[in-house]
Image (cartoon, rainbow, N blue to C red):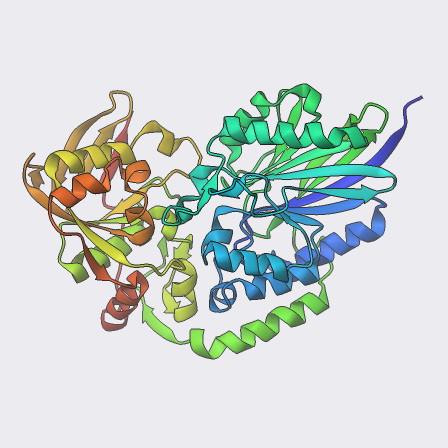
Length: 488
């Protein structure tokens, strides 16, 4: 006779400071107070419940930005996840600050493969074991170098650099702790759905990994994806939904017997509000409202940024503002740095901060026409269109690109109405994050750029430049005009 026990795992990822509910079609949708209400409801209804967060709790709201994540940790302490792993945006305020935030958390934040280079010592607890109903549930946290670009300037910090090495770390931990009769094993990752599939394929079945709960790629699934007998799930982004596993665990075989998985909507029809969490958030909101509620501008219409790997109206405007303000040939505005799907028509300062939370410097590079063509070719590589969070860019006005994906060739590439001259030097600006990652993001090395002339810091704050421009220029508008056209 089977020895079965029920385990319920709730999971979120890429919450990005999505603290407040929105009114949509007469329903309140999302927000941490409703999310917490649902988690508490399930904890009352079910015996064995674990709530896990697969990275990127931080960034995306003025409440998070104003308090550099301490507000987010305080709010999440009230929600009470059982375990979380780090994502790339946990590092936005610096690794030292992240270690401080980790000390502020009332829940374990785990990561197995971020380490100090000089001695290989891990920076975080690599795993956490939940002891629940005489079961032992092992959680292991994984991140990879692709999502650690913010640490490039820190020579003391490293990551076990690829999926293969991450897999070996999982094996080391599983081999060390399976001997204490682990009943169920979960990888809590922040590497993206495609990388989760690669990782699952590399894992030895004898290591006993049952489930991968992932993040980073904002993937919304209809059902778990199965690779190598391991179920992979992810819960989109924000707090509008939460993932729910109801699993019957065979504690003799230490494996899944049966399960159901679903995405549960977080709204006032399904979730009671957690008043304590709501009141706590409102205190932060009141403290920030005076600073952030002022109106900066009014657009002629709402501008949108629905996808990062295509030209967008909002992306066009921001890239244009920076090109015109700096007097350069081309602004490559990182699509991922634009965090709002829409902006306007009335733009408050809070809206601008949430849209452009990464307030870093802007660097001007000089590149030849040949180098610029290579950079754009790299931006348009097939990987950028396969659903993962590869870096992509919004191009400022004057750019006209027609790219054939089947031929992997330009049908048109002009700047200000002219083809690129191979040896001519063009002034191109990028934000600091992209400057620190020139080779992986744009396929050009710092050494190549330095040979063309001095690199200049044009501004210490990209957002300040945009804010000033919007304040002076009212009723702006943009439409997607075909600066970037993709053809088969």
